[in-house]
Length: 313
Image (cartoon, rainbow, N blue to C red; front, side):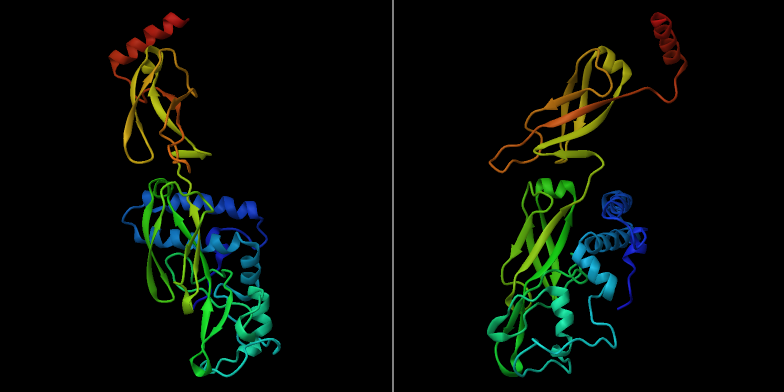
């Protein structure tokens, strides 16, 4: 597998701070987001690469391992670790000597004690669609079975990115773990950082643990249970009052009455149109008014604006 420079992917230096990495990711994620580049396969691939890079570099432990061993999380050629505390018993590992790399695994995964004195640590996550292939998630477990039929029992961790709208409405996703396609449902109202567990679906019967990452949306801001969006309002409508259409996160639109004399930056509330609450119901949607004027004026409109200007003089 070719080496991937995650720092180059995000356009930051190897000494970049956490804030620099987060800022670079947000900027690129907005630029290459599928919603803005529909049908563009190159943009979709770039978006995936950006998410993969951020998932590793934003986590101190994963970044440390990446800096030392590269993106695959595999032992480099010629690496020689200690031989103590590795696998116990026989078993066919295809010529791989687990004991040789015990120190490496201990450093990478932090052994917790396996079953029957087996491997105290973990294995490598698998799958590609949710960055499981290259994430060094906290896999832990031991060996099941006996003799040459021994197998890994692993808990695989990864991150699943969803858009704000998908998190709002809920979405059906398909991921690939260890060559197996798994279907899952992201519940409506899921928050960033929420954890989903697929029991017994990991390698050897372990669990798949997913952390949900909700991508930012340039149209909406989420604060608690409330959403805020900005809508353009023509200056005459703001001055005289009128009705405007407001696009909501779920895809539907609603009407909002603008009082006469409204100024730019004013916030108005649409009750019950915000984020789903845990106990039922929704928060509110706040609409921020952005006053606009025509970029080009017809002679008649220009004359009316001139009259209005003269009245204000």
